[in-house]
Figure 1 (cartoon, helix red, strand yellow):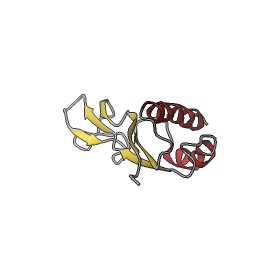
Figure 2: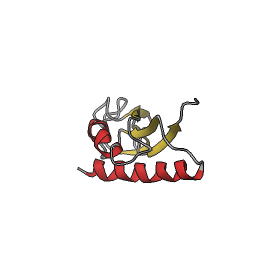
Figure 3: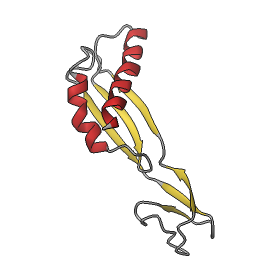
Length: 116
């Protein structure tokens, strides 16, 4: 389950932000996970409470996950289409030959701190 490794990496990155900005806690971490990654959002969500408990600045915070649609461009006809929705096949010509043009990213989008 590489999701735990990713979660510890997120915690380390957020920890740098917390330190650089002289903060003591985070209320939420927002991440984007593309459908064309090997990352399972449910595993990230399930593991977050375990990982966040190891860091004082994350304890009690929320993980918000935005799923980014995987989009492909057919190499045969040029059609752009949502890959998962179409099971990898071009809806115009039926080809499986495509370039992935969106949905391969995994990024920390935002670190939220509520003002007191």
